[in-house]
Image (cartoon, rainbow, N blue to C red):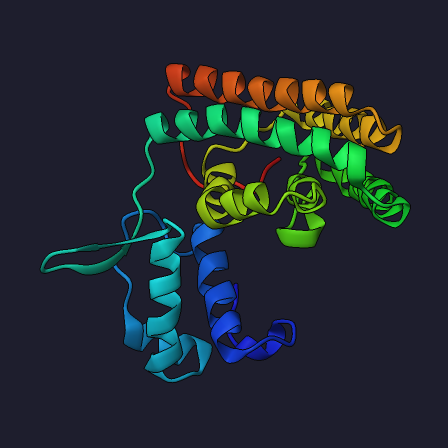
Length: 231
């Protein structure tokens, strides 16, 4: 749990506050539908209410916070229908990003992707969980970031990425998708390393489609949507 902003990387105060609150939403510390208290957050993060207000506005633009009349700011309430819609968009958007990345990525960035996969292997074996940190420790984020298409990157980062992170906590997967998700990531990265854009796009779309179908099955079976750290 985040208590003080001094634990975060060296960023502006506004960025630190945004990062801290966003992480609390992503991980379920601030659950869906919960009211956001500016005084409580200011005390928790040891800052004034000004950067808290700025962060809430930014979170609202990212789709993680909504304002209701006579209620104030609240964490968004997630829905299964919206989740499925996002996965359909992800399949096409990230598939295209994988194709572009395979065609334009640098050797240095390929080596970083391969190293990241290797580092994720050990905790996967130990815990049977495949959880990725955000940003530059997230395979999906890195592939989009490396696609060299500013419009695609902006669409993903500003409109989808933070929502995806929240949903990956709430509707994450255990068991059967743990090892397969890792192997799918590995195949995608290998296709990118081989500069095979068509293969990278196909594998990325298959990977996201498989995750969507698994989540749909969970929803049909009525699996609990308690926030979990998976994928």
